[in-house]
Amino acid sequence: ITKKNTYIIVVPVLDTDSDEVSGSRGGGPSVSTPASRRRGGKKISPPEIGELGLRVNKNLPLTYGDGIIHESHVDAFVEDHRPMPQHPCRKRSPAEDKIGQLIAQELVQDGATLQLGIGAIPDAALHALSGHKHLGIHSEMFSDGLIDLIETGAVTNHLKRLSPGKTVSAFCVGSQRLYDYIHENPFISELFIFCAYITL
Image 1 (cartoon, rainbow, N blue to C red):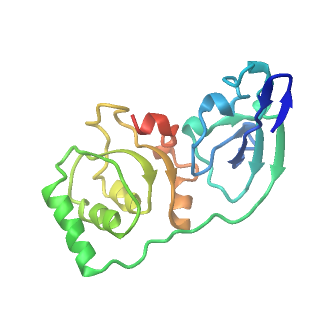
Image 2: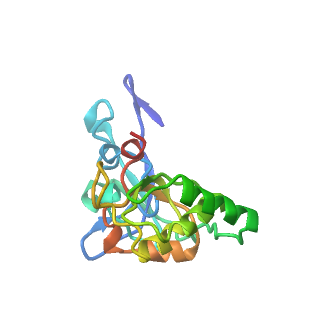
C-alpha cells in the first residue's frame, strides 16, 4: 500500500490457474473478490489507479464463472506452483450417519435447494440424499460430498428460483478428487460466483 496525493493505491493479488490457449485466467477453487476488483480495480477511487496482480499456480483447477480474467486486465504476474491444500473426508461414525439420515428424511424434500457446510454431518446428509430428486445447489461452499450427489442425478437445479439450472457456489474445499472434478468441468461452468450473490 502506497500513497499518492490523498489516495491509497491498493493492488489486489489473486491466485489463479491459466488457460494458455485463450489467454484467460481462471479463479481456481475460490471467487472471493468482486469481478469489478479483478478487472483492473474499476471501483477503486479514482478508477484509473486500480491495478491487479495475479499469482499463477499450475496446480489450481481451471474453473469458470466470475473467476475468469483476461490477461490484458492484469498488471503483473508471479509464479508460485505450491500444491493445493487437502481436506479429505474422514470416516464417519454410525451416529453421524444416523444424523445425516434424519436430516435427509425429515428436513429435505425433493426439489429443495441446499446450502452446505463442511464436516462429517453435512457429508452424512449429502450421502443420505442420493435418493432425492431435482435438488438444487446455491451454497457458499462446494465439497466432496456433492460429487456423488450430482453424479447420481439427484441434483438437477431445475426447480431453483435463483439461477435455475445452475449449480452456484463461491469456493470449494476438499480432496484432490474434488479439485480434479471441478477442473474444466462443463457441468459446473457457472459454479464460481462472487460471495455476495451466494449469500443474498
